[in-house]
Image (cartoon, rainbow, N blue to C red; front, side, top):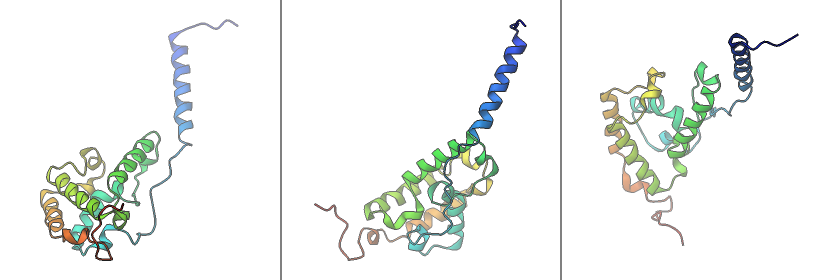
Length: 171
């Protein structure tokens, strides 16, 4: 039997290998970012925020910036899931609402300023996220409501530790 080279045979083999590769990568999945319990260090346990502000922030920010992500069906399809996992990891590295109380006072001040800036400039939530997560879209009024609430947070109290000492760098 002589194997005859043809474009049709080549395409069949390439397609078969591609299908095998796509099926194979479905078996390697990153760990889910889905803590079932709200930690005692969560952002909203530190502040008395109106329910509407909590709702807006949780819907628009917590999927990428906390330890609790609500996944959609397509987040479970690889390689999309790998990209989503990487995005969540980057988001939690810059700000993780679930560990708010573990941040130093100066870091909290910087994060609040960054949140305000990102909301004012519509940088967050990103368009590629809200395109597929419509509940995360924030209207201009919702953005302003969050910004107004953040501006009421007593900033000096953030840099004073529980022992009433300022959080200066330790020698």
